[in-house]
Length: 188
Image (cartoon, rainbow, N blue to C red; front, side, top):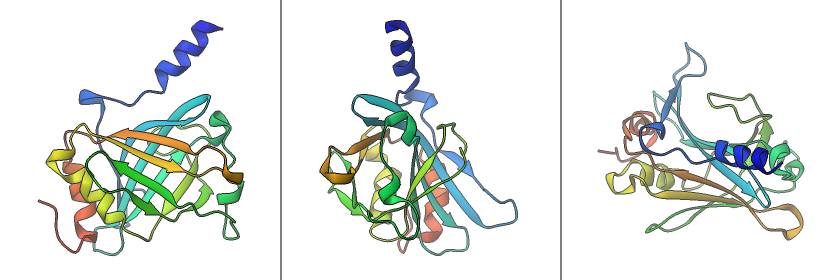
C-alpha cells in the first residue's frame, strides 16, 4: 500500500523545466476562441490530484476568462454548492503569487470534458468577471517565470479550502498570444 501511495503522489506533481509549458488550444477549429492551459496539482487534505489552469480569449477581442479544472472525486471535495445556475457558492477563489497582490474572483461551476490534460472526471471552476487580466498578466511577465501561483477555493460549511498550485512556465509566448486580444493594454 505504501508503494501505491508513493506512486500516486509522484504522479500529481507540478511540472518543472521543459515539462512545464503552456498548451495552446482551439476547442472548435472554426471559432476564434483560444485557450492557454498549464498543469498543476490540487490538494484537499489528505488527498492530492491533478489540476489545470486555463485562460481563454477570442482572437477578435472580448473578455478574458479563467478556468480551474480538478477531479473532485479524487480529492473528496464537495463541488455541489458551486454547480449550475442555481449554485449556492461562488467563492470567491483567491489567486496569489509571491510578490503580487492576491486577486479574488467569483466562480461558477460545471462538469466538463477532460481537456488536454487528463484530470479524471473534471469539474470546472470558471471565472468570467473580476480582475482576471491581473492574474493573466502576472503569468505573462518575465519576472513570473518559475514562481508558484496558488488558487484557494473555499469549502462548503467553512471547512479548509481546496488549494490548487501551479508554476508559471518560463516560456510565456502561448499565454501572451492567447490573452493579448482581450487586454486593454497589450503585454510585451
